[in-house]
Image 1 (cartoon, rainbow, N blue to C red):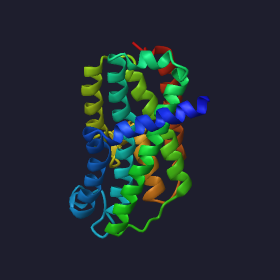
Image 2 (cartoon, rainbow, N blue to C red):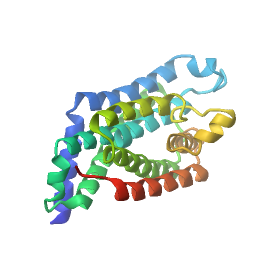
Image 3 (cartoon, helix red, strand yellow):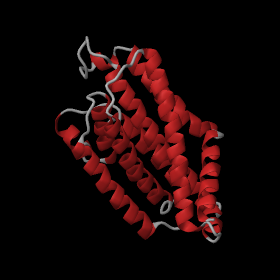
Image 4 (cartoon, rainbow, N blue to C red):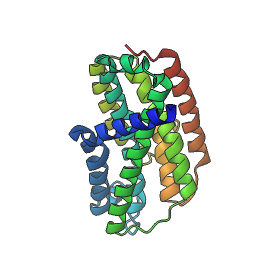
Amino acid sequence: MTSTRIVSQAKFETLSVLRNGEQLLLSIIFPLGLLVFLAKTPLLTGLGIIEADADPLSIAVPGALSLSLASSAFTGQAIATAFDRRYGVLRQLATTPLGTNGLILGKLGAVIVVVLIQYALVFAAAAILGFRGPVDILGLFLATLFGTAALLSLGLLMAGTVRAEATLAATNLIWVLMAGVGGLVIAHPGEWGTVVGYLPSGALGDAMRSAIGDGGTDIKAIIVLLVWGLVGTLAARRWFRFE
């Protein structure tokens, strides 16, 4: 059955991520390290992002969750898919009963499983550090759903059109830029903040901060992520190459 093949592919993709040391570093160790660093150092206060008496976890938790999602849905999947394409794995899988749609759904399933593991670890670490909310479940769900769709589609687009080595370099650079100046971890004031708010990274960061720091749903950010998801999906369907 098709569903059985998709589940098997998702299981294979998930285990590949969890057994890869570089992927674990990017997807789990870095986000958890960011969470502890922002929570335990005066960086946020020193930069004027929060008041001296404010809880840094209101920024650290959504930042760690956003970074986790970007690591798995964009960077990790783009790199893995690009090298699968380079070595001919994608071409072979596309000719099996799994098919191209089953392959994509399998990758999506793997991302969902890994993201759930990441979220569980981030929330557990945040609870140990003293985080007590608020958390808007609907806002968190929508941010995760549409953020995954946007970043995964863009990652697959890059993996299916650019050489593997270039994808490796570009996605890691983009990951750093998203975390540093792209609004993924912290909100940026002024005109730059307005600009990045319309990028996938900035919209995901805004949606997460609204759901976790403010306990609400940022409708504008969700719409931006939805639009990027649609654009990325259509572009990937048009230009993705299996060889």
